[in-house]
Length: 454
Image 1: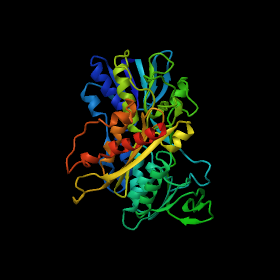
Image 2: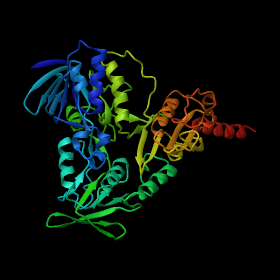
Image 3: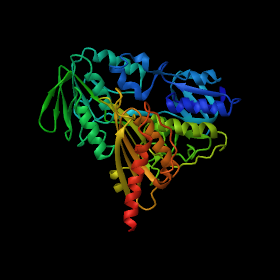
Image 4: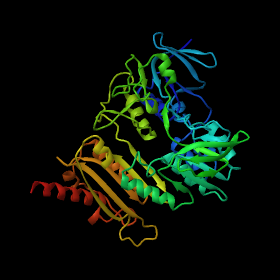
């Protein structure tokens, strides 16, 4: 039976970055990583396979950096973990012993067994599997009337991409009033939904799929809660993901009420020398400390870097406890991003906030051919002005601007400190330094705080 210092189960972003970081921090330790398929996919890139990339292999991700550093990779499935004996068994019948074990098993799609017809032929899911997505890509070439169920990031992005293909009629069904409502504020959700409606996707909100109908055992239509029937030859379910923790549960690890593996701030489980990272592990809200439900590659890799450095004892202190959730997307060429709290989440947590919005352009002057509008909405504590959240939409710079806001939240920056934020600017690259939208939004919140004092 082979022995390794570290065994990592899972080769998604969390598993790979844990391995790479751990190898950098502990180059003399032996490390083994398990992946279930020869090829892996960039999870957030999957929607773009269906048009912009138009090729599954253009979205491939693998553990080559880990291998280049001396890590060993096996294509096999771990079927059993014996925590007491510190050993694992695989589907191929191999056994290994470990000193440190990392669960990076990711997440699985939610199967809506409550919808009759969920298991019919030509009902598909957006699984994080190269083989499955390759099959789906081929199958959809011959499907012209497609219903996508779920208006979150994956559902909306997949729908938009499919609708770009000539001859395809794509319908998106969302049960909430707006798409993206679990990640964005009501205002930004409306912006995003309106932009989606400007594409070729036929969007229906505040409606549910009651049943998937069949002819000769395969999809023929969907019945909506409004009584409307949509004829289709394929249905794509995109209603979310759940932690992939069956193996962890079988091994006896403690799960939280959401089915995620319980871990501390350094991704350690209650069992000595067993850790969990990424979608399979629990996240706690940065303000409330309550169990949260954030499944993002960016979050997973942040956790993985902390874990990789600290596998053999805490060397780098984690300076920020709790998950922010930083989201971004682009619909109809409009970038949209969010971090931290908004009005809805603040109200649910009974947190008093102030907000301010400011709009300008992403170049100065605004006469360049590729200039885009850019709007920010900033959220801060009503008591002392610390920045608690933000949303940005418009030009592509929104994607990086939200990362600046994320850092401000993590470091407890206040709107008063933001006034002296030293920036770099250029006519082709940024808004004008005289009216930087982040600073202008902060100034507006300061005005509100000062008015409250009067």
